[in-house]
Every structure is written in structure tokens, then in C-alpha cells.
Amino acid sequence: MTMILRHPRPGVMWDWWAVDAQGFLVQFSCGPAPEHLLARADRVDAAAAWVEENCPGWFDDAPPSLHAFSCDGELPVYTRNSVPDSPLRLSDAPAAIADVAALVELRRAVGDVWTVHLDEGWV
Image (cartoon, rainbow, N blue to C red; front, side):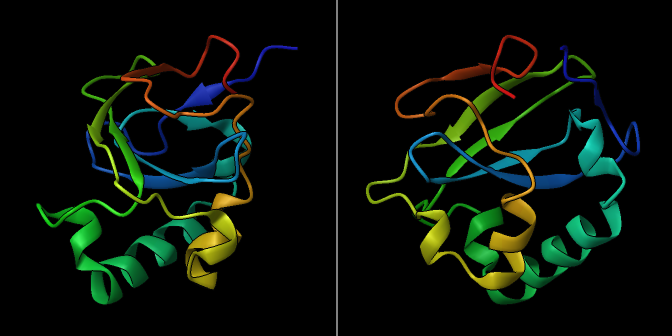
């Protein structure tokens, strides 16, 4: 079955999280997300607001603590922003983020991958 991927608010930056196949937290910015996550966009927005207040380094040039990818269009192709020295596991993530990230389980580990094509078997 093909996963439907859509952007909840085209043209507006939207951050969301997932857990990869090795249990690491992954942040995605902009671009489409799995459709089932869009039904919980209010929870994702609340998590993003929590991160902005409590973990601002996740959004700026601080040393990365998690795998982060961004998309520059409506296609589900994300390019890596950062490579963490010691990536954050979902089990160690703040509850506000872990609850939302657990909604999207990636079938693969992001590891040292530079590009994630979500529509090619990742979700």
C-alpha cells in the first residue's frame, strides 16, 4: 500500500519528527508528511512551539543533536541539514517530541544518508 504524503499548509514552514529504524529521532522541515500525521497537526504544532522555547538549538546553527532534513518544495525529497556526533534516541527525547515522533516510524535508518525520498519505501 502506498503511503499518501501531503503538506498541511503549502508555502508555510512546518516541522515534524519521526523515529528511524534504529530508534533515532529525525526532524523534517517543510515539505510533505505522511497523511495520518496531518490529522494530528495541532499536536505537531504544539511540539514545535515547545522545541522553539526549550530547545532552540534544534532550529539554529548550534551543534546538532538530532538528524535533521529539509525540503524545498512539494515533492517528498528531503536533504540532510546536520549530522549529529551523538544522535538523540527517541527514548531520550523530551516527551513533547517523543509522543509526536512515535507517530511516524521510518522503515530505514537515516545513518549517513544525505537524501531521503519519503515516497521510496521510507514510510
